[in-house]
Length: 422
Image (cartoon, rainbow, N blue to C red):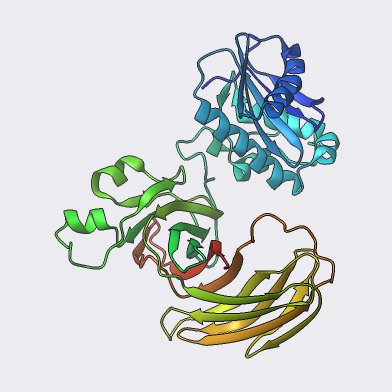
């Protein structure tokens, strides 16, 4: 990979803090970055990679801060981006809010972290839990020199040894987000499921966990092709998963980090039946009023219930004096969003609800704004997955042989869920 230096710049491109790792690039080269970046933006050709003479600038933006890495070599760009995002994540976990102020207030700590996360341009320990064990915000007493935890030099760099819990438990959440785009005449234009398996691990010692899913490739290779299985695409694992084992026999085997982490994420590019279908009839009477009739229908099984459903219906910017009538839930006008928010706390499967809204329009017509924004829907359905993914087993193996309790729950929620209006 080899990045030569890492800089953190403010919104104007002034260097707040920087660290030279290889010494093969003049550090003042960063002065060229902001003019080049603005020039690219003016030409409408903005890119996260900018090349100038023999130096490459690789940057990401977070809360009006620029994180820039420079390189002279043919570096692994994807790895540099991954490192910069990880650096932001470490800073957020240390300072909660990452902005110019928090950088200025924590110079010493940031220099210490920059020393640890990279060495000679190569990433080292980027796990914030491990870093927090020996880089703290309190000053160290000189009589006991701080020693890096053994985890830094271990094969298992993401977990410390000698962790003890009175009650050994594992919580596993399968969370699926549904991305959906429906055209004005009711055709599904785009649908996909983005899933993540998140874990909270409270286990003593160095346990090994094995997770079994109803994975299609595994079922077909073991002659269970007819069983209900799921074809996972774009699977991305946490660093603790043994990839060679997964490639050989599709077993997800790992020594987990302590506490909360995302074990894996996946995607399914399948045709998803819209879980909450929204039909809209909009009658516009020029210069006087606009009337909406919105029908929402839940298209999942009766035994499931969607919670905290929000249907966000866009209205004209110059609409006034709202009146609502609804069979269930409550409505409110949000002028800052130019929308009506229809909230339904509990929406059981197979139900249909109606909402009517009436707005006054001014007698002077504003210029028609371009396009009509779609209706957005927010929801959460517990104990339910759209893809049909199932955790078949979660085995916990530890040499002391203690009994641990695994808890599994499933949640489906909205991702980018939009329905266009007529």
